Amino acid sequence: MQEKINQYLEEIRDFAAAQSQEVENFRIKYLGRKGILNDLFEEFKTVSAEQKRFVGQELNRLKTELQEKLEQMQQVHTHGSTIEQKSDWSRPTGALPLGTRHPLSIVRNEILEIFSRIGFTVADGPEIEDDWHVFSGLNFPPEHPARDMQDTFFVKPGNDQKEMVLRTHTSSVQVRAMETTKPPIRIVMPGRVYRNEAVSARAHCQFHQIEGLYIDENVSFADMKQTLLYFTQEFFGKAKIRLRPSYFPFTEPSAEMDVYWGLNSETDYRITKGTGWLEIMGCGMVDPAVLAASNIHPEKYSGFAFGMGIERITMLRYQIDDLRMFFENDTRFLKQFKY
Ligand code: PHE
Image (tube, rainbow, N blue to C red; front, side, top):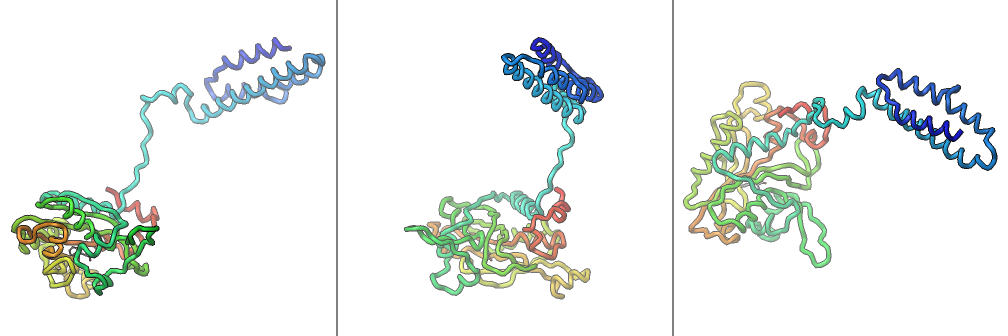
């Protein structure tokens, strides 16, 4: 009986099926109700007591190998290829499903690209920041109400550690750049920012900004205006901007830049509140006190800075009216943006 078992073992190891029908025949022949394995188990009953142990082991081995072989063949034949073909790495693959880029990334990349064409490079900094880079280094005096302009999330400090905040604007990266780079500085700084605001269609506790900074000798307000006009024309395809006086602790003078959107449709009336103008970003000439705080000589150098919210611009571009969509990761929304 042992010899028979060995013979079958050899037989099944050599067996190769060309079609799925042969796999089924194999199953019936060996593992079927009236198949070879059952016959052998029947015969096993007649084996002498002292041989039972050994022959039993052999028989079980045959059973396991049969089942493994069958399983393997079934897998190969339902997938329509053989193991050898599967390990041929030179075979062409099927089409890989491609994801889509997030609309905020599409818009961010486009803005960075527009500024790169006029010599701006990209810089970034941490989202968890210290007070100096978010506030004090930007001329926010301690306890000054200007800090209330931005509802800050504070991070509980560990033992002996200074208090940290989630940055409320990307202007913190300006300070990092000024501390570590000698002018001329010409950078754009994209990133996520946080403010303690109730989540709604128009506001969120997290959003994205792009900051710009240009510092050199003789940089003027006119340079800023021309740079922002260039950006507006490239990005929005709109020809007209205006600068309204505003206030930020770190720029002087400060302004709010509006783009003339026009009043050509009902939507234009709605989003511009009937004025035709849309507010796009904050900007201004870097305050000499801010330059000095980062050890840049305020008499030798001057510069301008600007900052804009990416969500707002993306909503305008794609006519999205609920900010929360950006953070819900609903693929029905996301897959509409191919790039
Ligand atoms: N940091 C300002 C804000 O978040 C925007 C800004 C950036 C204004 C740079 C002026 C210069 O509102």
